[in-house]
Image (tube, rainbow, N blue to C red; front, side, top):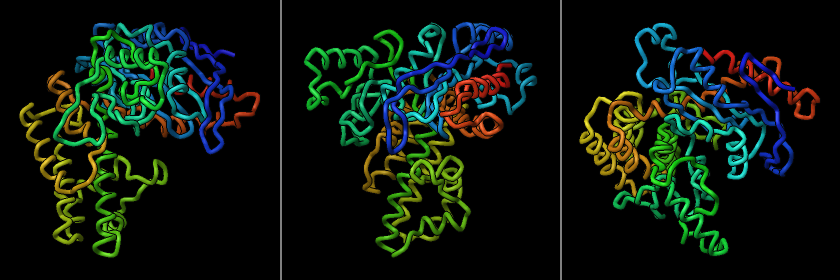
Length: 415
């Protein structure tokens, strides 16, 4: 059965995908895909009164709250004052209220094969001529590069830096041609699994559409939401270990409880967006609980907050030289912590400035971030799926319920 809304068609399909969970298996899974993506985008443009020359497409890919989703925000390059008045601050084109779901699959594993199959079904390459960027967490970036996981030897998706990472040496930025060349050589040499590092671990065909000369960082900007989350959690996790060892108790947890900052049970029990913001805002209170020798951790959090405030938003009000200076201040505080340089910290220090060097300061990275895609998980679950659509996946009406839920969600976000 197909659900049609004027020119918009949402179609259920069966794809052989690997399911999520402890007993993961490959089986036929119901997915819903928007058919004729170019017609769908034309309809959005007509309803919003915009043209191809006005827009930038931001594609989002993520797994959350039982569903893997491919999403799109149609960003207006130069929004007029009249459009701002019409839609209001809650309906910014960058936000979840203007996001549409293009592909939807329930309870699947977020791995290369699943991502590849759904990406191809969505037929995104049909509109690759329109200016666009991709967004998601670093795991999705690694998938698009054709690497098996973020634990491989070449663990950055933006450049060819090898582990162990440090803040002294940058890698060469990947072009699509570099990734494709690595994969061709890997296959030509018989796909030697034990020598993957020789090919920068590009063991799968890269999923990016574009010319060989295009750089990955231009197509997939640094995902600032996850850079914030993972950096704050990384610093706090090591501070927790230090306070347990040196003070006999988890002073970070004590501070968090006193300030009602609660770790979420999902995502491995990490602090999420609002919790990370609270930690950085209230870092003075955390510092008061620490012995002097551990206050270098809170100073590092302060320096990182400056990076977040000045470079992670939709607007940038500092010069490029000031961005470089901010990064150096962070580095000077981070290195004395003597903790690992994660791919996230590597991204922050090297690739955030590189992106601004290449694209200028007119628009901030927040405009291209994964925040709306992340927000979509709870928005879809709470406002649509749980309100009359959720049924067991063995129910005969399950495919139609998926179609109906996706159509209802999108119909509220066309204009």
